[in-house]
Amino acid sequence: MAIHIFAMESALLRALKSAAKLGEEKAGMHIATASVFVNDTFLRLLLMARGVAASVTKGEELLKLLSALKQFDTLSDINAIGSRRAIAEKIISITGYPFGQL
Image (cartoon, rainbow, N blue to C red; front, side, top):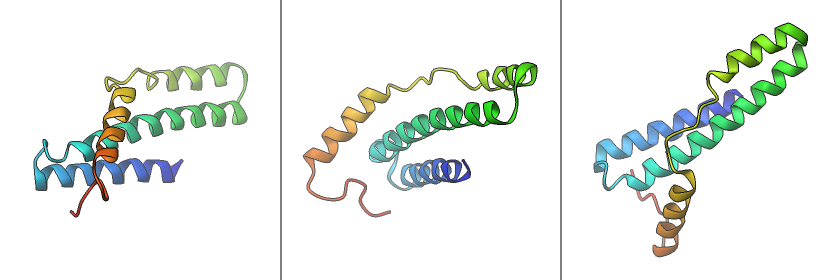
């Protein structure tokens, strides 16, 4: 789980660095990629947390843990499918590494 959190932080920090250096419009690819990655990874982490909770507790304690995890289980406001398509179209349209040099 820790490596997933580190990877999410790294993606976010790289997108922020890109936006600060290039501006939000030019850093759109970085921002979209980081958003999709963080969204997907967060959902994976929730699934892992449920599995861990089920492995270490049962009964009423398990229900309490699952209830606590439920507060994080909300739909994100990003259009992940649309973002993935936009990312794919951008990568297909260019001939090189899509993120350039930072």
